Image (cartoon, rainbow, N blue to C red; front, side, top):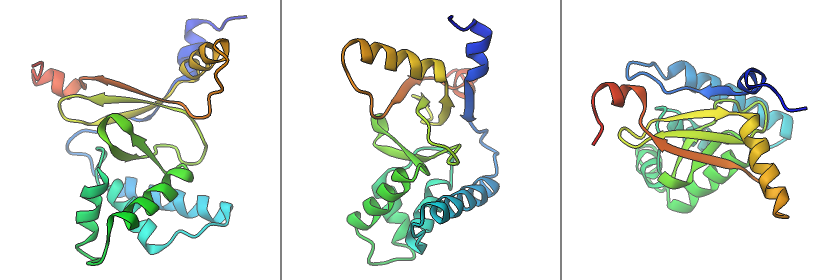
Length: 175
């Protein structure tokens, strides 16, 4: 039996909402580091100082950050940091569900719920580039159902939706 619209809405979660410009990211960074430590302990993997630093830099704002921007920030404390160093750390963080890659922006954001593996839907503001993370099982099921009908085996699912956040809309950034 199909779920009601209300049941489907209850399945949807806003994992990481758009953040206000005055938002203090300090607590978010603390929670992200604690989640990473817990995940790595559970997985038996090493949460090295470099991986920690890259995760902190990704979480230093709620906006997407590119690998080369991370590299420049890292070079403030690690003069010899090179692109492979950053990419290896980013790969590790993605493999452990601690960050997500936003393909359309060629950038990374912290995962709002690293305690569990999940698909993701990302609302990306075309004006300010802020990102909100959703986890809507109805969307996951719809994509999987359509893929199955085509004989396609879904192995990873990320949906990116470009639009305008409420702050930019209110400011009249409707170019």
